[in-house]
Length: 220
Image (cartoon, rainbow, N blue to C red):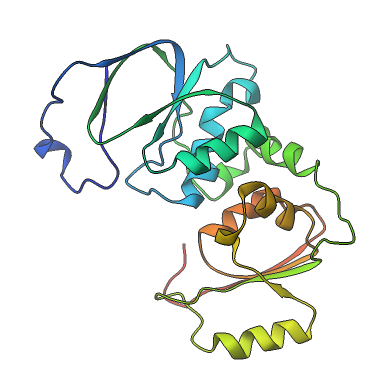
């Protein structure tokens, strides 16, 4: 019996009301791709949700029949399954109530890179091996943030400097997940502002050079 609270909900656990209506019954063995602790973003989806969805293969465990993802993350979930292997999926909304035959998940996953567990990291390295550097690959990529506290205020000046040194400035959000993985897997050098896109470093092949730009008072 599992009650799922929407990560966007700001109530404390003590203030949450019991779910109303009938529970959704799911037969078989299920896991989840829900970013924990209210962090509904790309980074936690890739580094925490993804290993949970495929931990049966990672640790040679009984097959997971399906995964629970979150309403609003349908596109990313669908793209993930197309790359890593199809899974049965249900999308949970706020205060969803499930009755599961069996629920399996990895305990205590946290980024960066889940403590570099070699079995979990193999999930990324095996996938990145499919991407081969070719004539159209960007050998050097740069990712800048235009807005927010971590934004680059003199972005135009920095982009011009990076371009002179052969970097292609990209916006990961403008590309599919497969294209993003390919760009990181085939790059020799990466310059990026601290942010969720750096979760894709899990797919980088050695040897590669990475420069992360970060405010002195904003580092995780």
